[in-house]
Length: 575
Image 1 (cartoon, one colour):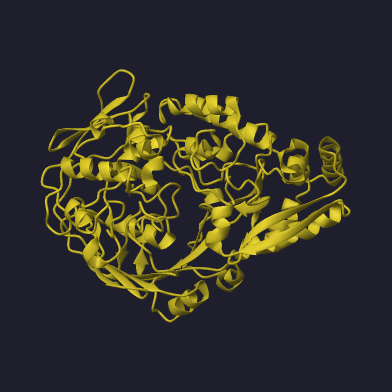
Image 2 (image 1 turned 60 degrees about the horizontal axis):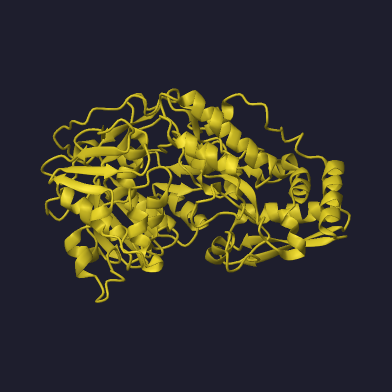
C-alpha cells in the first residue's frame, strides 16, 4: 500500500547537499495531468488582494521561476536546492553576511520569448514595494529573515511622509546578469535562497500595459493575455470560472527536468464532486474528505501526509471585554487544561496535539529529523494536558483576578470548515459541562473570508474575536519560521501579546546558519516554544492528516510525501 504517514517518515536528507547548477538538453514531454480547484483564481498576481488564494498558489507554483528552486533526490526520499535562474548559489561579499551577490544565467527568456535578465528583477522589486500600489508582498521586506536596507521605508513613505529614493534600497544591478542584495543585518545563505524566489518576477511590458493612470493598480495576472510566465509551465488556456490549461514552457531554463506535456485545471465545486470525477477517470488527483477515509482505507492510490494541519485555539489576549479576561494567564490555562484532546482525536480521526510546532517541520536540517522528534522535557502528553479539577482552579483564580463570577466566550467558526465545526461543537459542550455553568461558550459562524480576517489582532477593533480555531503555515524546512508570527514586529500582528525574551531569542536565531548551527537553532526554538506554551499564547488542540488520491497512471518523483517538498507534482511522469 502506498499510504504514507508523515509521523513515521524515515529521516530525510534535504538541502545539506546542494545540487549542481548545470543543465541538459530539453527532453520530450508527454501526458496530461488532470486536476482541479474548487474556486477559480481571482488573479495570478500574488501581490494583490486575492493573490494569496489557494487556487492562485496552485497555478503560480507551476508557472513562476526564481533564482533557486527545489528538486527531488535520485532515491525519491528527499530534496535539495538547485539553481533555477541563478548561475550559482549566492556569494557572500562581506564578513557579516549583509551583502550578497546573485549571478543570473545568460540566455534566460520569458515564455513569450522576451529576454530576461537582472533588469527584470530590479523592476520587479521596485513594483513590489511601490508606495502607491501598496502591494501585499511588502511584508516580506519587513521580515527579520532578510530585511533589505530601506526597502520597507521606501514602501511606507506614503504614510510616514519621509521621502526615500529607490536608489537607497538594498538591491542593485551590478551588470545585466548580476544583482547585489544588502540586508540591514547579517543573514545566512539559506535566507537568501528563500528570499530569491519569494518576491517573484513580473514582466515589465505586460505589467505596465495594465497600469492605471495614477499607478495605484495594474490588471496584471487577471487574464491569459495579461500575464507572462517564466517557470516550468505556461498558460495556454484561460476560461474564466471553468478551466485553466498549462503546457510545458519550452523556454524554461530547467526544461529537461519536466516530463509531462500539460496540466489541466478544471473548476470543481466541491471535494465530493472531485471524488466522483476521479472514480469516473476524469481526474488524476483528488483530495479526500475525512468522511470518505474509511471507504478508501485499502485503496493503493491513497497517499497520506501532514502539512499545515496542526489546529490551534487562537486566543485574543488583547480583547478588553469582561475586564480583559482573555488576557489572564490563569484563564488561558483553564482553557488549556479543559481540553480532552484524546476524546477529540478519537471522535473525528485526528491526532491529539500539545505542541506549538507541527510535526512536518524539520528540526535538524542535516538529517531531516523533525523538530518535534528531538528530545525535550517541557511538552505535556495529551493525558497530562487534560485535568478538570486544575482547569476549574485556574478558572476561579482568573475570576478573582478580574472581579468576575462568570463569563461568556465566543468561538469564531468558518462555515465551511468541516473538521473545525465538529471540534468546536465538542469544545463548546465540554467546556459548558466541566465548568458547571460558570463559563458559557457560544459559537459564531461566518463566511470563510470574514472569519479569516477577524481572527487576527486589530488595533481598531480589539473585540473582533474571542477564540478561534485555525492553523498557521510557516516553512517546513526552517523551524525558525514557525515563530515569526509572535514577534512584536510581525505585521499584520497575529496577537497583541509580546515578550522581550521571545523577541531576543528570535533575533538571535536568525543570525545562525541553518546547517552549521543546528543544535543552537533547535535549542533556541525550543526555548521559544516553551514560552508560547507556558503563556498559553496559542493553545494546540489536534493535528490531522490529509489524504489524497493519485491515479495509477501518475508516477510521482518521490516515494512518499517529503517534508518541505511535498509530492513534487511538476516532476511527475504519466503513462
